[in-house]
Length: 355
Image (cartoon, rainbow, N blue to C red; front, side, top):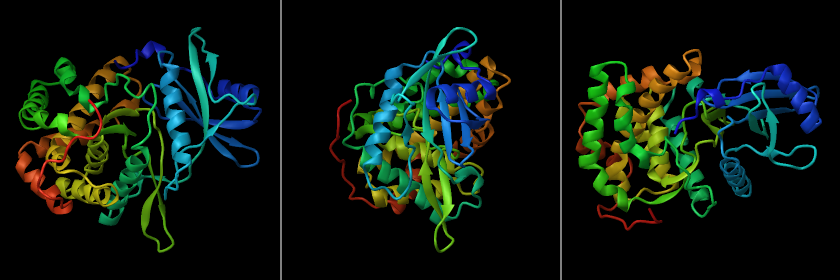
C-alpha cells in the first residue's frame, strides 16, 4: 500500500539543522531535495563535507530501513566500479534514530554520505555507450546482491512487479477512459504472454528503482560519460531479478526516438555484466511495460492525494508517451530486438531462487 499523505514528514530546513546538531554533532546548512513519500535534505558542513539526511514517513517499518542499511553495508564490502551510499552513524553510534514531527508522529531518521555526480536524466545526450554503462552498473549490482538476504526482503511493496495484478484495482485512478483501456490492454497482454513465464524467472534482492534521477553520471579520463553512482535504495525488495533491468530500461526509454533501441543498449550492458537467461529475455518486454503501467497508475493516485507535490508526476508524461508508442509493438518483435543485443542459447533456464 502506498503511504498515506498524512504520515509524510513535514520538517523545515531549520528543523533539520537543529536535529543534525543534536543527533550527529554537526553544524550544517540544509537544503530540501525532491521526494516521493519521505523527506530528504542535502547537508553541507563548514568544512565542505556533504551528507543526505533521510526522514521516513511515519508508516515506514524500521525493519525496511534496516534492510536498506544492511544491503548498503554488503555492497560497501564489494569492489564495484561505481559508488553507493555509506551510512553515517549518530553521535552515539546508532545507524537509525527517531524524531517527532509537529503532528506528534514518530519518524525514522538516518544519514548517508552525499555522492557527487550528475543525474542520468540531466546527462544528455544519452549515447549508446552511456546506456550500456547504465545496464552494466545494474548488472554488476545484481551480481553483488545475488547472495544477499535479509528478514525484511519479502516485504509487500506496490512497486514490486510481482504485484502487477493489483493494477486492475487502480485503473479507476487513471484520468480518461482511453488511458484506462490502454493500461488494461497491457495487463491482458502480460497475463497471456508473460505470466506463464514468471515461475521460471530468477529471484533476488534488487534495487528496483533505477530511474533517471537515482543514477549518477561522471566523465571518465577519456571524457566519455559513465555511471559513477547509484542512490536511493528505498524500494529494495526480493523479486524477479530481471525486473531490475526492466525498470532501468523503462526510464532509459524516456524522450527517445528509438524506444526499443535504447532499451536494447541497456540490456546489452546488463547482459555483459550479469547474463540474462533465455526465459528472462522472453519476459523482458512485458516486465518493462508493467513498470510503465505501475508508474502511471501510482502517479495518478499519488497526485490526487498530494496535488501540490510536483515530484509525484515528474515521469508521468514520458511514461504515457512510451506506453502509447509501444502499444503496437508485439512481444515477438521486442524479444527479437533484445535477443540480438543479448545472445543466449535458446533454451529455458531452470529457475534460481524460490517464489
